[in-house]
Image 1 (cartoon, rainbow, N blue to C red):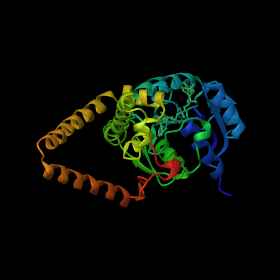
Image 2: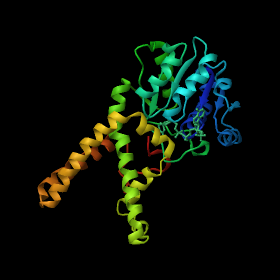
Image 3: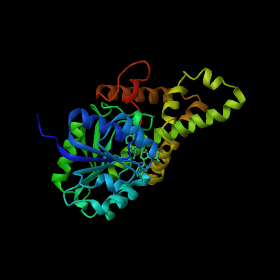
Image 4: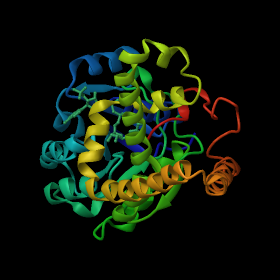
Length: 310
Ligand code: NAP
């Protein structure tokens, strides 16, 4: 049998992402030992009941002691706290990675606090669901999904290779880019769609007082698909918008201009403009299906737990 990639792998934050990593690491024997830390005692005991690790602690520093690799899976606003807690126990060879949905801010928070910044390899798996907590995870979450690595100028190549190996072992395909580029791309592909979903569901909720439950009764007409995104974790998404502010505001500005153009076309009966826009967008969905990132099922390609937010 192959040697595991790591002796001790530490996961800080055992929610949807952390618990999915733990399950796959165990299933593929990617580490000899899994250490888990979470500040939330209920999450920690749930993880223990599920048998996700070999060692559990409410303190990140205890779980990170003696680790070959520490993967922080907490909301992006907590990245600095994690770095501060683990810094005193890191060894020169300990790799530090994360899974945060925003990258430049995580680097700004973590890098100055780490004793060996060359070992920092930030990562973002483009996979997730609207559910949270240790029970929400599953081993195949990352299968055939992208994981974006955003090394800093100081990250050494060996550290980058090792973290890429971990993510390949978890089933993901690897793409590497700068943190700034990542944040721009994700602002339009992930952050803005979530913001629109939160907004449209909020608006419908306000209207519901007028229409009395018809919003829920007839929700299949498009609204239901927004409600899935709008059910995503409030803490995670609050942090995403606070920490990717500039890119989201830029994307939102363009979106508002395009929406105004559609509004104008409807007002003036410009059917050609509407038809051309909808034809162009239909082709984009086909491209996404062809790229294997979605399936063409009539339920908007929703294939159960793995297809959702990130
Ligand atoms: P989650 O299910 O909400 O779990 C996060 C866990 O981390 C919670 O148990 C939380 O405890 C704990 N935590 C928070 N601050 C902590 C700290 N300072 N020290 C130790 N534990 C702490 O979150 P998730 O959905 O797995 O997301 C984790 C990270 O992955 C986020 O950065 C997110 O942006 C990223 N991500 C998420 C998705 C997705 O679809 N969900 C996809 C890709 C990447 P409390 O309950 O006490 O806060």
